[in-house]
Image (cartoon, rainbow, N blue to C red; front, side, top):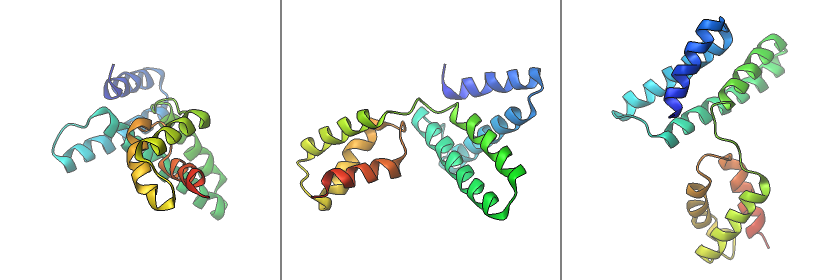
Length: 148
């Protein structure tokens, strides 16, 4: 079952169980996916669907930080619940050890030796990770590995 099919099924379940927050979050995801399809003028592939949801998670986390700064704990709680729902549609994240193995493998493949080779390593490692880890975090790990 593709991720879009799963979204449709979960939306039906949320409708039947009268889970308004889950329903609105899934509708928000489907709307974002449809907008991206219109923008690209084609159907999205699975990895692109994952990227759209990851962007939504990131935006939600930024909103949580702003709401906390503004003292709006009611909105923080709602946003955190939405983030949990969004994350339920993402693939299981890789552990740090698994990511470090992939990074080390990519460093050997690209024969990287310094921070100047960061771009080469990132270009090699990110397709292997395939959306199962945050790019900023991977970038930080690669920098640590390449630093003398």
